[in-house]
Amino acid sequence: MNKRKFLKNTLIATTGMTVTPTILLSSCKNEPKKEENMEATPASAATTFTLPEIPYGYTAFPDTIDAMTMEIHHSKHHQGYTNKLNAALEAANISGKTIEEILMMDDLPTAIRNNGGGFYNHSLYWDILTPGGAMSDTFKAKITEDFGSEEAFKQQLADAGSKRFGSGWAWVCQDADKKLHICSTPNQDNPLMKVSERMGTPILGIDVWEHAYYLKYQNKRGEYLQNIINIINWEKVEARMS
Image 1 (cartoon, one colour):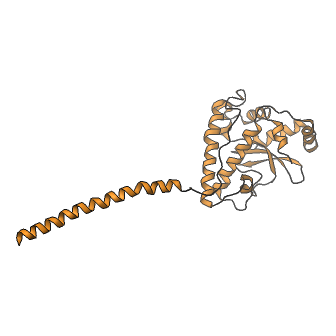
Image 2: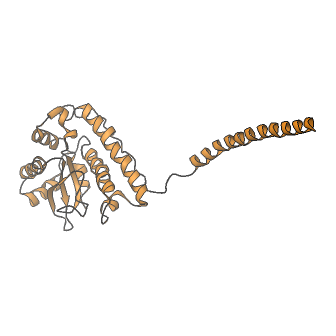
Image 3: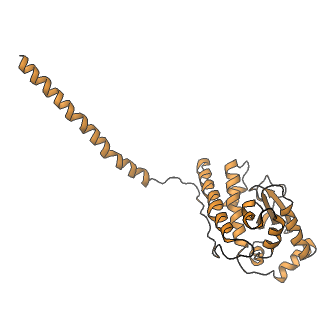
């Protein structure tokens, strides 16, 4: 009886040892399938924005903006706004809208306001710096009509940027009545947003955050503004008018 009992207990113990590893192995085999399924599932149905390329490269304006500033500004700052905007839209379950439609929404969440503004503002900034494009006679006539002269227009634009306390943007916008006006906004706000003191459709935006100019100009924001106004592609600006 003792021998039979010993053999019985040994068999049970041996069986238990073989069953347990089988369960573990089975579990391990299932894990890769679970990971594959997770990767195959779309992460989100939300609108996804991508960083626009700079077709003219980082060395297009060596006398006005140094290449290192251009590269950091675009590949780090603008890319960061793009990534955080996409994450904020996913979290808020917002999809199927243009960036303009998003920025004009009521009660924008702070993350979308900041990063959506950063994405839109910089996209406009890079576009209006595209090399070439002098003012047409038609655009000059519009500038004279709304600001008195081309010189007065450029000075008012430079003043809007230089007098912006802290970080922000200087803008040329078009109102619903087609009249042009100049304003500025703090941080990454813009005139599309309902928080703006004066709303309108931006046709030109100049970044006056320190990261846009500090490596070359240090604290000389006024010099940066005067120089950058001289390389604006006015054909691009005029094309944004309705």
